[in-house]
Structure formats: C-alpha cells, structure tokens
Length: 130
Image 1 (spheres, rainbow, N blue to C red):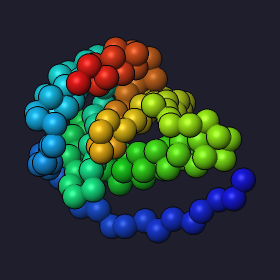
Image 2: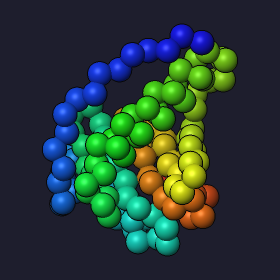
Image 3: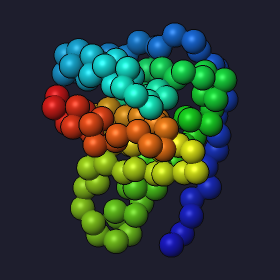
Image 4: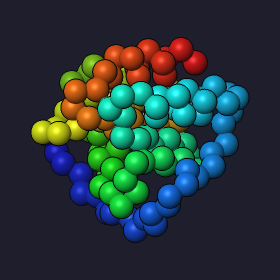
C-alpha cells in the first residue's frame, strides 16, 4: 500500500471552541456539547470545508489531536478504497491510554477523543441520532 506524504500546517491553540456554520441546524453542535460531558471524553474536533470547531480539555495538545484526527479519517478513506470496502461509517483508533472515534456526518468530519475505557458506543449512537 502506497503511503502519502503530508505537510503539517501550523495551528494556533485556542481555549474556546471556534464557530462553525451548520447546514443542518444546531443538532450536531448540541450533540457534541452533550457528548463532551460524558465520562472519559477528552474533547472533539468538528470540521467542514469552510471552518472548524475544536473543544479539548487540554488545548496545549491541539496540534497532536488535529494531526490524529486528520490522519485517522484519511487512513480510513484510503483503506476503504484500497480494499473496496465501500463507505466507512466510522473508525475507532485505540492507543495505549486513549482512543479516537472519527466519522463523517453530512459534510462534517468529526473526531471525538476519549480515555481508553470510555464508552464509544454511547457517543456513536448520539452522533447518529441527528
């Protein structure tokens, strides 16, 4: 499998979430705000083609989380294409201490970062209830 080289863009850490325009009302943003209160949830990144919303408990790790978010979504698309899997509904990447749930809802790319023991099924059900 061929690997693509990526360029890392400089990002500025923020302590407050950025605003995002939503084409499907406030349901997605409201659901993410509720998910943020779940046990073990570290934060989330919500992106579309024009803007992004980032809400993390530790904003000093913003760049690390942004790279992980982008890489996991890109990898899921590449694997899906390479193995003819069809559309990927979601992907969970589990590490030593944490995990990330990444998915696309409408035209929004979402990554929710959690402690390793957090319940990602609950988060997934909430995001698909939109």
